[in-house]
Amino acid sequence: MNVIYYSADQDHATWVPGLQAALPHAQVRLWEPGAPLADYAVVWKPPQQLLDEQTDLRAVFNTGAGVDALMKLQLPAGVPVVRLDDAGMSVQMAEYVCHTIIRHFREFDGYETDMGNGKWSFRKPRSRIDYPVGILGLGVLGERVARAVAQFDFPVNGWSRSPKTLPGVNSFTGEAELGAFLAASRILVCLLPLTPDTEDLLNAERLSQLRPGGYLINVARGAHVVDADLLALLDSGHLAGATLDVFRVEPLPKGHPFWAHPRISLTPHTSARTLRSESIAQIAGKIAAMQRGEAVAGVVNTTLGY
Ligand code: NDP
Ligand code: OXD
Image (cartoon, rainbow, N blue to C red; front, side):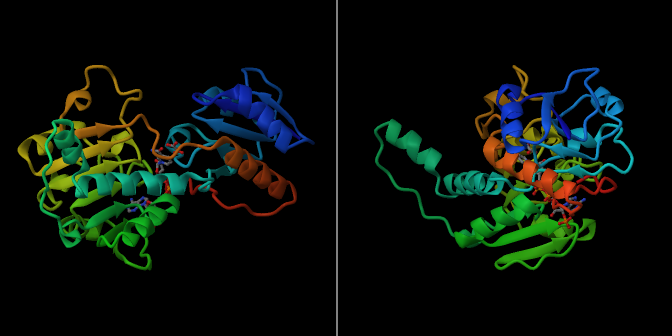
């Protein structure tokens, strides 16, 4: 069995030996143009050339949860695309989102500034009921985040394509209920996949539907948000702030207005990292299962794009 690995970002010097150790009966090699035909490809943002040349693939494994980069390519017909299925990401995402919500809700930035200025003063405690959290996307990551946020007694709303029954989460479904979901939320967390249906979803019209003093946390993909509309709503005061982990162009270009905005906090696409050992173990386990003819979890619906 032959396995190829390619990543536009990750370190092949550790992934190739890691996959080889987990698949001792396979030959694992770094993909280069002209590489011998493989049975499985393990990839992150591969070039079209890889898929065009590799005509014998039985499956393509994505070393991330989001498959938007792969969905832009011409995929080989009938070859399953398998996403990373949690593999240690959901707990990281829950940490990141809860941290951000609590930092905003408890005004810790303000306290840090005050204490830094030698000022000992208190702010009026806020009521959780005034800070309902809306989570766009209740999939592998969104569900874990929703459960974690609900543990802190915030009212939680969730939006997905299909209805969900999750303890402590009000479920809103589809385009028809998006307006009601936004109007019921003040802190908005984006955990949607990037698809033609969700690109530019968070525009002026939709972000204005959030309760006044809204707060955006985007941990999904930069292209969910219309940058200029977000900036205008921050500047008008309708939105109190935003924390952004993902951007239309990454790294965020020098001079982009997000860098210097006083009410935007930035992180460099790090809210839920691909953890190498967990991911390799998961992918190797699924390759072994496929070799035995078993079904595996995390197969992407290429029609829906996630
Ligand atoms: P999943 O595919 O498991 O879940 C996607 C969720 O979005 C589902 O609940 C789905 O609804 C919902 N959804 C999709 N399209 C629509 C639509 N048109 N209308 C309403 N709901 C919709 O994804 P994950 O939770 O694993 O990951 C979400 C995204 O997070 C990834 O695609 C990726 O972009 C991003 N990500 C970011 C990382 C980072 O470090 N910043 C790390 C990892 C992922 P339904 O359940 O009904 O199908
Ligand atoms: C992912 C990501 O989709 O890292 O896994 O963004």
